Image (cartoon, rainbow, N blue to C red):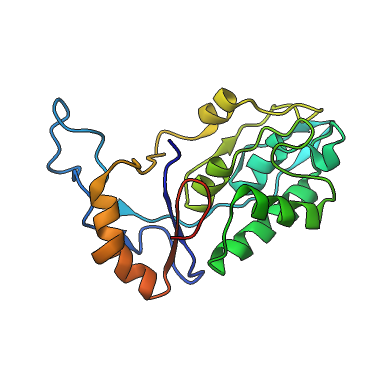
Length: 208
């Protein structure tokens, strides 16, 4: 099942400045034998969005964030070609603007945004391998790294390949975790949301 995501929508905030304290189990209290993966405290992270550098269809240096993800997963114009670095950055910037506005980022919504930057581009179009939930996770600050040397010569990362590019710091919210839903209804998540600091999405991109 797709993981919900908490995104920092207030661009004035930096990594670790906002913390969700009421998700369980806490890292300090969890029993690694008996308890599921710790969910709290959760320090919220800003979305990363570096401009990729590409030469001869090869990524020239390590690049992090949403532009990097779109570069290696989207088929630009459904023409069996990766987007250029500037196209990837333009699409990523547009998605970030929508997230900070608190707008829906479902597959249909994302595809309208992508198509508006590079016509004919979208999730499920051509050879694109991008997924809604991975885009949401990166918007929520999940670290994603494309290392130097990766080909972007009509090369689109499959799902497992994408998973391998999320760093070890990646800790998605467990959808079945009741503490997340309680916090969203009456706890820290609700408070941060009402204050305009965050936007929360279900795993399919509906703002909740």
